[in-house]
Amino acid sequence: MTKTDLAVVLALLAAFASAMGNVVRQRSAQEITDKPVGHLELFRMSVRDGKWWSGALGAIANYALQAAALALGSVMMVTALQVTALLFALPIYAHMTGRRVTRWDWAWAVLLATALAVVVTVGDPDPGASRGSLGTWMVVALVMGPILLLCALGARIWSGSVAAVLLAVVAGSSLALFAVLTKAVVEVVGGGVGALLSAPEFYAWIAAALAGMIFQQSSFRAGSLTASLPTSVVAKPVVGSILGIAVLGEYLDCTGPARVVLVAGVVVVVVATIALARGEAAIMSSKTAEKLAKKALRKPGEIPLAKAECSPS
Image 1 (spheres, rainbow, N blue to C red):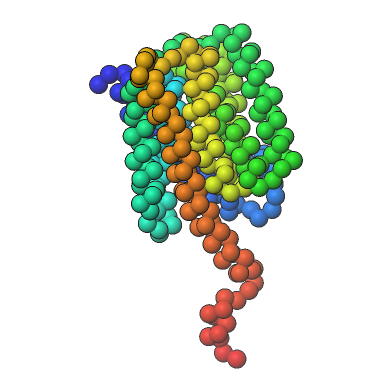
Image 2 (image 1 turned 120 degrees about the vertical axis):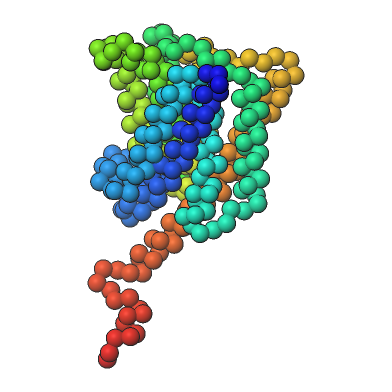
């Protein structure tokens, strides 16, 4: 098995862990409170929720497996394969909600898997360097910083789906940044704890991971999952690929007609990802709405109807 093959296997395992974690954290974000709360307050409440921690363990496993995959493969390939989390989530959602996966969902799933295989095979992304120069990172900070800040501020001005999309952009971009920085951290950690603590990428890496988790949780709660989930899933590979090319010098090794096939594959991946994510988010949203409605009907101290009818007069 080559390094690339092993990187693919690890990236798929990371996507599976991500699917397990996301399902639980999505439900936690929707059910943890009925009151409007800020990003940090929601994260604080989530940390105190046992259900959220089971989802967080999935996220941590995802990060660890991603790091192993990024040590062997490119950011473009690993982040692209992260969208397969949607494929793994299909049977998980079906089991949790007690609903069958529709033919359309399976069709989009097959289309997504096929398109990803085409992109990874035809594009054959080159891993590039492990660390970017200080000058390059300064340019990235000057470009990404204001954009993500405006998205976060916009989410405070607007509400509903708009806020969910804006927060999902911040979350997906932060996780993409985390993936790029992971390559540097993996290289530096080989020099020991001292080398790790003296590397500026290490601190940016931790900040990116926390920002990704906090804003992703907030995006799940800000509006419909049909708005936040597709956005965050698509933003991560798109931003990750751009950063991989700009910062690490990665490139797609294809010429001539292969480029046309590659572009077509990328378009299909984006379309199938959005369609599949919207379908899964709609299922999860409806299930959560049902649970919240049942909670609202059963107020504290209220006797359930069935028991009230059976009680002696």
